[in-house]
Length: 388
Image (cartoon, rainbow, N blue to C red):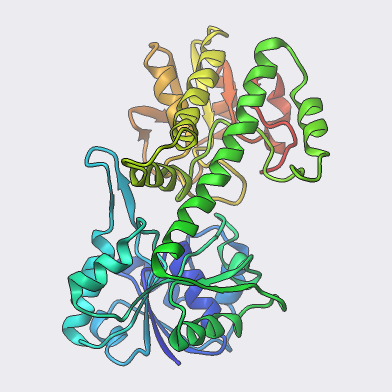
């Protein structure tokens, strides 16, 4: 098949590389510098499989910044542009998706779209009515930062929001390009597919929040968090996955998806959805208070990213910790190799790691890394199991 992939962040690039194993792919992004790097088989994304695939010479993929050329002959147009939740307007901003569809339909009135961007529940049906076409299909992604292509190659499931011959064709196209042998495939109504995405991510956020609140209790009462979590997790119904305490959930998906799902609950009874969103704020308050109680003069933030093999600062919980500490008049400095600026939100960025360690009274790190071992006595972290 001839495919167009619009948007080359984690989701778009992972899909483009995955599908180019057996399909003909044109991959487009509006950022010229990103396209030029990809044309040279380079990317700033921290993703091992992405880097490995970019070095392969057997993939049928072309990276381009020519939108018209990308869409004019594609069988399917895969949209993977960024969407976000606008807290002030209390809605999910899908303007990038609509912009792509508007421009593409002007070139190809009968274009068929596969939306991979996260959208609110009910969006696909609204978009079909708005654009006067039935050729809009939602197919959710379930990808981890730094493991996007791996999770596409070994997917937990393939979901296409259309139970039809066309839906089966799309599901089969993805299935033929994965490495996993037995993949569950689910064809659903488009609105149910949208709900699956948001409810899945909100459940994961709930699990993060649960173990964080367990840790808050243990730390407040002088108990051993690790022993409690290990004992709880031995129950096979609970399991030992996704249970390592942190400063809160963050990243590309969980903060915006939980808030969007909560917004979808207007006039629908609920308690848990509000609690999941509120719990993340409460956790940041607690962590910041624990740091402030140590009465430091200078607090050092070790990495704005929240886990290993990530380059994403967006919605990272540690930024919320920073704001709370600075609000108390305490100086905050940052060590983040991915930053080129001298300041980050008016906090000084220290490029030299040794200087950073010497300057600060406390090193705040969401995850404990080996390079912090020599200043372990300065480190504040809630990383119990030393993993993501």
